[in-house]
Image (cartoon, rainbow, N blue to C red; front, top):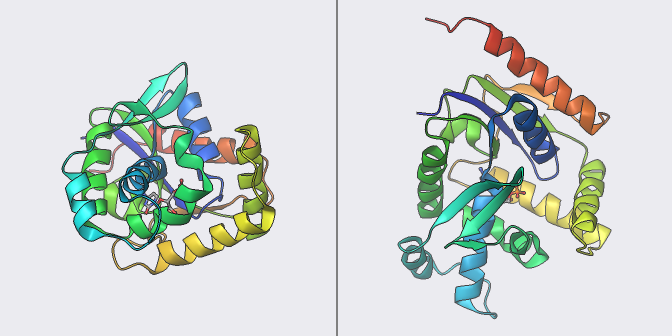
Length: 231
Ligand code: DC
């Protein structure tokens, strides 16, 4: 069992990664980026299926899942994503992966595999875990649940800046389209859709600076850490 879990859910570019990373660093918790894990498996699928049809081949998915490892490792204070022992931290951020990750993530076998792996990664640790279904499915008993929201224009601007920092060029309209598409797809899928847990606290980051959003969530966590465990 994970020891203390901060679950942060929200749509693409809502500020969850930056906040989760910042809160984890300040509290010395382990940071789990579940989106990166889905992206890693999507990368493997895209490499294996070759170019051409972008329909999900369920048999291929099943075969690949039997022989895949996805790992999160902290190196030089940064979280790195490993796919079959290869560092894919940059390769998972390309538009090709962003354009296909929602379709792959909607498959129930993929979700079961990932949820199990996410719980293993969290075992015995204090974690800040971010994604779409953390407070609802992966850690429904998390001590703190946050649901982050922000206006789509602000979210697109953030994604563009993040990509720019990684020297990956992107078109603003395409980024906005991708965010809209993924939010819709992730929210409407049958298996563990993106939705706010009933007991999650909503944080709207539209008008917050990064510092403010980290401090706001950190304060919520600290308050809970100081409170006695409910019996
Ligand atoms: O957080 P991100 O944008 O890197 O996530 C990429 C995709 O992965 C997202 O569009 C849907 C999927 N995902 C998911 O289905 N469940 C999660 N817990 C995290 C991500």
